[in-house]
Length: 167
Image (tube, rainbow, N blue to C red; front, side, top):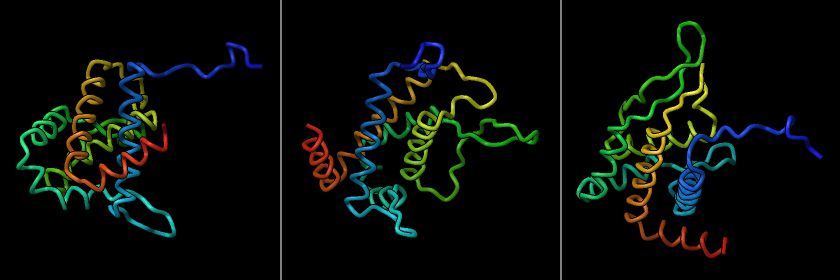
């Protein structure tokens, strides 16, 4: 039996329902991407190919006002990614767009939110207590996931399969 003094502390500073909703929807969408053949296989390992999805759906997404609003809200919030500074310490920097189209960049930001939250990225040199901003990032990420879901009938079908399996 574990004593309280030996228990791992709760580091989640966000409302659990919001964090759970983001994680569940992100995981389900990523699973559906792989099932819908938006995937990359390397050394017998499969990963979701978000860039292919962003490329394939760029035109229709940008013509959809609700998608554009969700995407622009996420880009404006500009989630940061971890880096290592000149002193070899963990630090933060904006995500660079590189050669991504607008939709691919929004999906990169979505993955940055997931990485920061899931991999404990909010604790580089010091905990970053920006709970209100983090809540806005999660909500914006959920909005982008909803809009991506609406773009592809096959993705919708795969996610419905996941929901039925979970029930």
